[in-house]
Image (cartoon, rainbow, N blue to C red):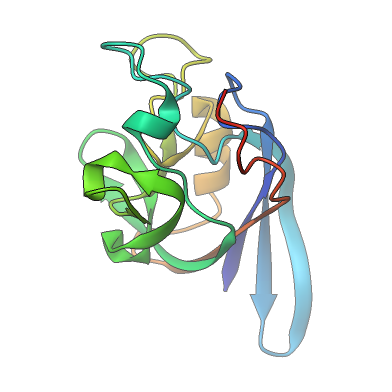
Length: 163
């Protein structure tokens, strides 16, 4: 079983890819083996909504720390991606304006960022993203329809820091 281990090191309002991804392989009788490490990524949505500048906490949601099931799928726009929890509900760090201010979000992928404007713009409304080259490298570790585990680790220091 492959494990995509995301280390959240950034705050949601910081630009770019300041989190880190490690891809591991684990078997029932074998210890975890690191396949690749140190890949830049982001576990947060965009800092603001591009159309009107609304800040992330009023426009999007961010996945809470935890462990989630995921599957490698073919996304119609981004190509080979991970879909977390079959696209169903995940817990959010803050209330989500798109879900009547509940602490939930859905349709979360790990996809390449920076495709529509600049390499540093994540292009995320709550999905995990990485620069296109780092995303391609990570996804080379899995096959289409392969099930994986996604772990989101980090500190909870970001709570309340919405400025």
